[in-house]
Length: 59
Image 1: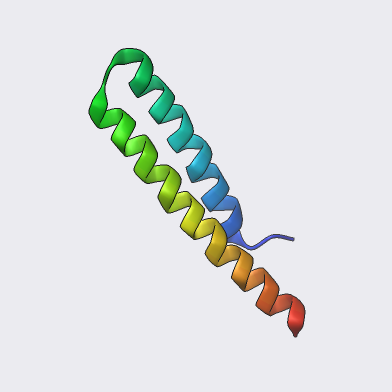
Image 2: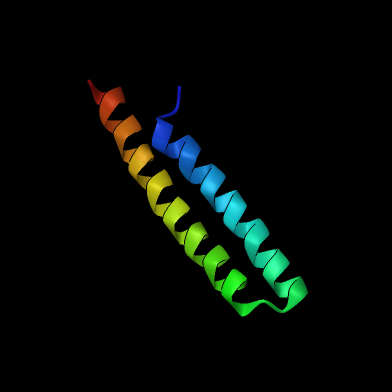
């Protein structure tokens, strides 16, 4: 079972992707920027979860 951070990170990336797309469609630069930031945050969180999974698998 994947680490909670991986699941949450993937969800945050997806939500950020949607935010960015809506921002592009509506011309809302702030929403686009928030979406990009959410995607980066989700990617980092997903990576942390991957490291935790790898550490757990080694033990």
